[in-house]
Length: 308
Image (cartoon, rainbow, N blue to C red; front, side, top):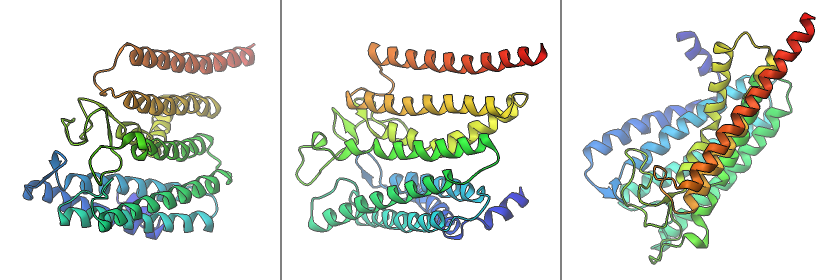
């Protein structure tokens, strides 16, 4: 464990400093949740900075680890990662600043200052998206010897971009809340701030676009973890088969991200799916199982040919 931490300390320095800052902010926000009794949009006012700081700490750590896998340094990727750090600092400064002012950071145009701050966050996210895309291209252009790791990194980076894109409907005209100065919403069919699931706050009475966004964004961690599990539990399989199974899982993960977003856009709570949503889930499960079975069957046939 100590050796791993020492190695991590030498990963992309701006990212790791950002991760340390986000970890400290998460602790401060956790204290704020307990010590500050203010409620905003139905949840403790410090919950948003807590969730964002934890998410950005995971994001920064994973990006730094991925950059460390490259056989040779990519200055373009490293500079793009530094841009991501800068944009993350901007976003968290606005979120925390608005908490200290006792108001919301997202969709808030109730005053000129609030509108400027929300626009600043939107610009930061767009720049972050482009920088993440640059990193994805730079990483995929390098020859990573471990095919499974290469697929895990590539799929994780790509699906995270999808996770960013599925958040766009939150700010479309169809999400106008009808409240003066509020342009956009997480929830669909119900006002933001209503009953929600513990911690995450996802609406239990209407659709919630944060679900698909959350799932897509954390592909960056999910796909590498899945690659590790495949290697440990199915280590007897050859590298090509493991990589193909990972591709099947990546496709299913992307489809699941879109499915959650589609469900939310129909104003449907996550835990109250209708028959159409359940049918789509069943189709995804069957398609994934069939594709995985085909990969394993192909390997089995290849083994029989070699044995003959």
